[in-house]
Image (cartoon, rainbow over all chains, first blue to last red; front, side, top):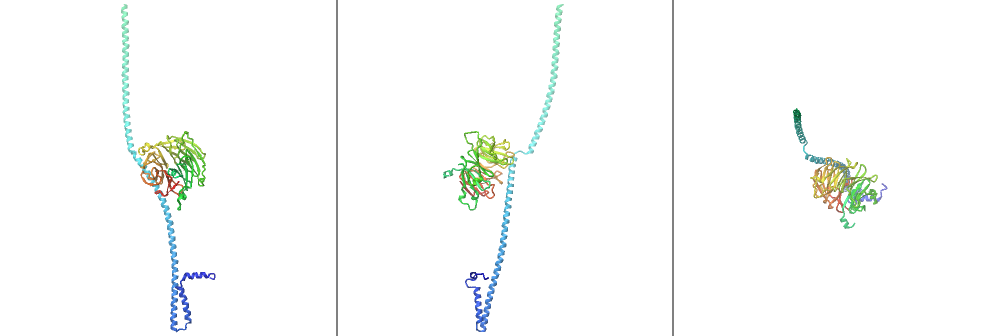
Length: 203
Length: 323
């Protein structure tokens, strides 16, 4: 305490009670009235009234000191309260940051999903333009059946054609053989005739 | 760059750096400009941050294609491909690592390179060139290893189908060809303009934009932008967008498309156009999404003006970078 300079003391006192009004003056007055009362030669009633007055001033000083203490307490508690609110807000800022990060990831995922859906839709549009697979299969089956029937008919016709060909062949070969036989016969007949006539002429 | 040059400037290509903090854009004067996205997107960005940190002339002709690998930026212009190191570019050192020219048969014209794509499986670069062929450059050895022939007119776009290791290419002849990247054979050829639902005869048959995510393919240009299912090779949705689309991309559950018209179209896979977000250039040539960075996730579009619009939220234009 000895190192505290006069300047500091003066500054502090000026800060607390610079204008001379208030507690400082009250304490000074109390001291002065106390000394005056100790040295006063006046009557006991005056002395008593002065004493009462001093007690009143003392009570006022105590009262104001009590008030200051309470205000100090209150300030401390307010500070604590503000600290708590400050840390709450910091925490909520952090959690909001985290949530923002999460939401951004969600958005990326949703965009990917949307892109996939749109690609799917685009492909589906193209596929819709092509005819239905069942229908095409049915058409193919019908065509197959028709093809089979037609080949069956073709086989039949071919067989008939073969048969007729063979029959004609038989007929033709028979006719040809008959013709040949007839020719041979004719030739042999004419030979006989020519042999007979010179033989007759010669006799 | 006087005001007249700025007025006539078109941005043809863009590419983000592997760290995602820089954007390289190529214009029709053969210049590449490097923009710092970190500076432009920071809360205390000024108008000066929307200007490039570095501009240099990369080629004598327009830079039609830019592509970033893990450490280099590949640029195509005037029929040749140059490679620039990203670390050197951020230090403002503009010396290319190498410049290669595919061997073109015709000697008179210089075929332009419209599009390039990297095949990550064998670290090769597929170059869609103006001589109707795709040249495959092996990035490790630096030699051209194959030429895929089949198109009858110059190529507009190439892209890679990761899962099946196929290369898709679209060209002026209206055909989308699918090449097996190992054997180099043309596996399929789809002539989009022959399909009645997609064809728009008054625009022509050329295919200018092509993109795929292995199962589905988006292609458009003269014919309407359409979504194709690759396994069945059939068109599933046709998007009713007026004008010809020059670049399209799949993004989450949507399709983004840019082309003629001062807007970015957002479409759903089903075929409806959900939104058209206006932007400053009168028509758009290129669109890129910065997927490599988590804090600078932006969409940038560039086209017929010296401005490149930056979208931090896909629903509206945030600001513009300018050359």
